[in-house]
Image (cartoon, rainbow, N blue to C red; front, side):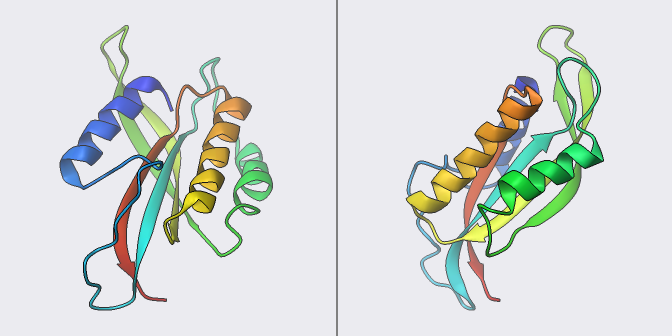
Length: 142
């Protein structure tokens, strides 16, 4: 995801929910009527490559199997997304297909490390400027 996408999405996310960075402790809701207090983490992974082209379905599947699944063995969801961001140089709004990885987990350093490792691997492998991460406290019942 490009920097413009991250800034626009981050501003929207902050306006709409109580988001904090992955390194700050997240306090669960004071009381969960059902389930237990957990953290919902969303990673927004842009599929456009800066040099042109996109992350292919085969490349995505390989990344999913090698980087995400081993770090989230208890489970996660992947959603297809369409993001929009303003290019800082051209001032044009750009559309970009993306993947959104959603994980529910207890707060803690092990979860933060796994999530950060995925984001760093994605940026390295696909030459991305950034990966947007959104964390929020939730009540979850399985």
